[in-house]
Length: 162
Image (cartoon, rainbow, N blue to C red; front, side):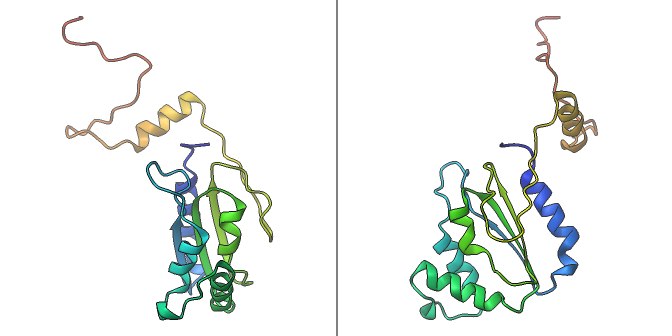
């Protein structure tokens, strides 16, 4: 479901948990629902992840090789990985580090319940209209005069129609 702040929730949780994962905290936008962009392939994501500290000429050319290198490098790490905007378990599974000390937070518009490991999928619902309006009012940027605008169910009256 778009627009329920999955990314904000994952980033907030990652921020709160970051001290438990001192070796790495990584965020990857998998771009599965980004207008005008193709989803990031597991190979492209792994090439970027695995390349940290590795000569790019030494990177394996296939998905299994890249996934193996990534998992090998993460074996002793305490790392937190946010995989945002995932399309499917096929896109996500090769990116899972597999180390005991790693935590992966995945956001998706789709239910991805077939990932290996201890997956706990919290499903988010849209807010009721009154709560959404209240949240918008709290989080919307203030106008230059210091006021905050809130959405209304009625369009504003034009000066010609008083």
